[in-house]
Amino acid sequence: MTTRPDIAADIVKLFATRDTHAVEVAVLQPADPFLDMAGEDLRRRIFLTESETGKTLCLRPEFTIPVCLDHIASQAGTPRRYSYLGEVFRQRRDGGNEFFQAGIEDLGDRDTAAADARSLADAHALLSLVLPGQPLAVTLGDQTLFEAVLAALGLPRGWRMRLARAFGSAPMLEAALADLANPPRNSQLAGPVALLALDGDAEGLAAHIAEGMEEAGLSASSGRAPADIARRLIEKAQLRSVRLSDDAFSALKGFLEIDVALDGATAALEKFAADAGLSLGPALENFAARAKAIEAHGLSSAQIRYDAAFGRPLDYYTGLVFEIAAVDGDRPLAGGGRYDRLLTLLGAKKPIPGVGFSVWLDRIEALREGAR
Image (tube, one colour):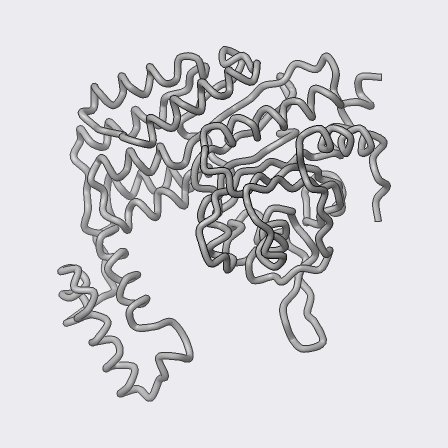
């Protein structure tokens, strides 16, 4: 076990002033939620093990999913804010594989703009407390706004899903855009399956797959359902057959090139939408409301950058994403975002909006040591 950082006590005191409930979650966690929802970057760094009954477990690689699972199990009401400070375990190229993280998970607040701004402000306040005098650089992205642009451009579901999954990974996004510009035409589908997939006949394709599985003696309950297989085949057919017009492709590239100070971001997005002839609706309205809420916390929006192509490598994010680093620093000190679908996917009976952040205490300690 690594040593609890000296700054831990100050962070716990700060959390107490933020109307949070301190929570502790087990070090051993069920692995499936992380494998299904955490994203490829985290999945490949998880330490896996197995229980006596054969259940796949893992050492806690982050806190958001365990805190949400604990909230669901406790049947606590919302809105509710949880704070934590403890070890996480990941394989890392630099630094130890056991390190401390602290953060706040804000669940159930329906005013998403206010909750987003509060999460960013809390993360900034924590770093300002433990790194007094250190200039900080804040970068924001917005998954919802990106997906709104994809929808407004008329991209089919398969392409929207692929690009949404690539958001936040420059190599994946670059590869997806290259395929969108020149879709691969080679198809492994043939006969009736190819025709049904190209026609988008989900019901007919599912029935054809089910018939084939029955003839082969395969049980539909032993693997993926015929309807799921049909949906994926149709999405893949769309990926091969769709090519954006030059104007639409240029608009998408233009959106991803937006990189401005937050105080000019709403105007830049409005101009982009007008020039491209797109309606971004509630996504842009919520962006503008969040920008105003951030400024109301006393954070200078001139010091915060909005990068339309910026995302974070966790699959459960749905809206705001952000990172805070030391000016000229090469690694984030804090990162967070919104995850409105996560609790439902984890088993909550009703949708519960959520937003949160984590800070890397080992990186903070390294900066403090360097300043002495």
